[in-house]
Image 1: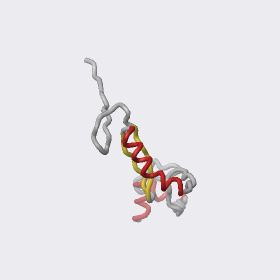
Image 2 (image 1 turned 90 degrees about the vertical axis):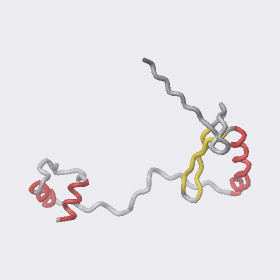
Image 3 (image 1 turned 135 degrees about the vertical axis):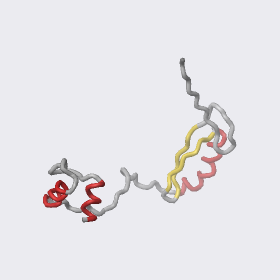
Image 4 (image 1 turned 180 degrees about the horizontal axis):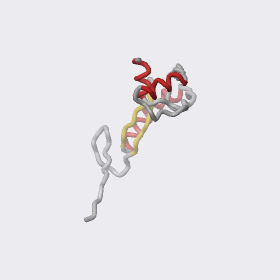
Length: 108
């Protein structure tokens, strides 16, 4: 038996299903958004933002996700020996610890 999946896009504002739906991505106050709009509603969206976009300056591109600036705690060889003796026999000499191993260290 053959199976066919059909995706039907509709305008998020008026609910109309047309062949000219496009996803518009934008950000405001640090939050990114997406909205599916028909050609007519994209034009209205562009016109509404035009005044602000003309006066705005482009922000520098952000690379990757923001991560905490704090560094991970250093795991010593003694920590690794303790972990091996306490339920983590296959622990390697180098590399990241599993969440369970990190939690065990924190709770000892």
